[in-house]
Length: 168
Image 1: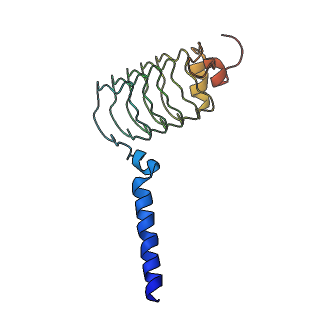
Image 2: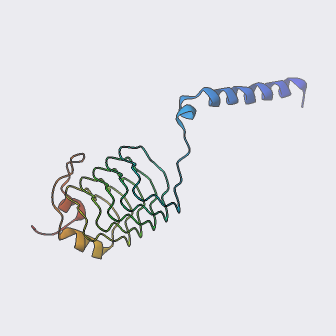
């Protein structure tokens, strides 16, 4: 390799490094938070932007996630009993094998969320939107028994989003 090719390669490498360093996309990039295996009972995450975070195997009992942005977040196998998710955005989230027992899921958005094998005993789903969410047939049947309301953000009826048949 002649000297001018080496100089040219150096200039290109330096230009790429500078472009990445000053790029707005680069400046906005952040590493998602991981709360896996954490005991977060009673914590307040209300209104926070937690996109892409991980809460796998976490204890989230009595935790407040009202109006939180948890799009793309992973909650696999977590305990979320008596938690407040009023108005939270779960779009594309993974909440499989989660215990939602006694939780407030009213007006939450679960669009395209994965909710397989999760429990929904004694939950408030008034106005929740489950459009294109992945649920077990038994879960849908159980949720349809209490489904009511319209989601304030999407305008979708809870019963319609679950595919409930007939009037309640």
